[in-house]
Image (cartoon, rainbow over all chains, first blue to last red):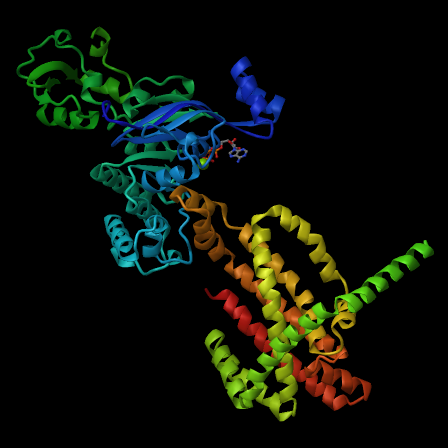
Length: 355
Length: 275
Ligand SMILES: Nc1ncnc2c1ncn2[C@@H]1O[C@H](COP(=O)(O)OP(=O)(O)OP(=O)(O)O)[C@@H](O)[C@H]1O
Ligand SMILES: [Mg+2]
């Protein structure tokens, strides 16, 4: 994934709301005022401050933050529903703030789909017509766009509902139509602003799994906004934590849980179960630190999570597991290492430290 | 102060006289156009036998509202015939129809423009407020000075009175598209025209229909008042009956007006609720 093409490149982007935003930006860049200073001195709200991120092809990128942290503003900067006050956003290498109206329309229609928290299904249209909306505005003939919309609806399991109206659907089904509408236009990138927040937990879990599977299957990239860390961990390949408009940490779920950037992130991840997050390669110790013979130990994969390791170790009644990569034993995970991992602490002497 | 008021009044009079003297051809043309439209609509309504009109409106009410209102509509129209007021009822209907068509032909485009340009909306509002707060029969005065006694004057005054609600509610409907749907349009890459026809207009339809309904009701009220200037129809019947203290005729004509108003009100209201 690290080598995949960068689809969205957001470079030091700022968004300041308010009449005096130009002055405020000037003061921020020259004097380094904080969000609170700007509100006090200029009456302007800093929505997004100095955000940089890259979304690569095939990646699901989650942005997590509390209410008011600027998530919706940031995601709307990515397709220029909001103009940045400062900074550049490149979509497939092109600066979208320099595009003229026609080029911007084409980029939005062909490359960037969007799914909204409010779903925004047109109440006057049935499910099929809603799913076909994106293709309709591109001027695709009716037969062709209906076929694509029906195929997208089939992918989200709504084939039987094409002739119904949005008001006849449950919240979860409506959200699926929203996803199908984005998929029907076959964009490379899908922006999702808290799409599942209004749903009850069970439906939500189900949609999260379906969404992740579908996105991976179709090879789409997604930027997914949520205020729920569990959701971000279930769905995201990488997670960005946002606070007061700034991205304070970007990394995999494992990075963030094992090594929180500051106390704010640490408090966030405190309650998160490590069982499925932390992998063998993070908790293992070097073979040299293991006193016994390695050859008799059961083997495991470096990508196996703690939950799987515990299952394996209890079944085999061994004291430890040997982590094997490319036919070579690269480390050992003992029961003690697993217990440390559950608490979110790395192995006593992490291998990474020596390498 | 009195001098000022006097001179203002004289100015207004002068302007009206000047217009009648110098722009007569213009107002004559307007008069022929208005009367032509009215005569055409009336001809169509009178040419059909009363039961045909009653059945058609009854069917319309049945389709739009329900079976019972449909039957009531047909019976009520038959009652207008039985009271010997059929010609007058149709004249009133023709006046309302002609006036509403003109009023809507102007106010829907204006309302849509005002919905897009808040400045135009702000500029129009005081005028619309003024039109709506003045007693409606005021508009008969300049109209009668310029267009003379008859249906053309009634139509002109009715058009003025009927326009404001349609302009207001059309503008409101266009402006109040829910933000999330505007965003949906933008994010889907719509053109400005697509934004209007595929997103803003569908959301504005209920509001526009409510405006049409209100305009129609205003037109009704005004058409009856315009009986004073020889508009023809039920308004003139009532006016004549009041002058001769002919109570039974005025009551019959009032019943006919109530029937017609309710029928049109219900039909357009249910059209507003449907898609
Ligand atoms: N159009 C606007 N004008 C002024 N301030 C705005 C505007 N939009 C957002 N803001 C401000 O920017 C900040 C970030 O808002 P944003 O909607 O991006 O937050 P969020 O993280 O999406 O929150 P939530 O989880 O509640 O949706 C808030 O302080 C908000 O008040
Ligand atoms: Mg938000």
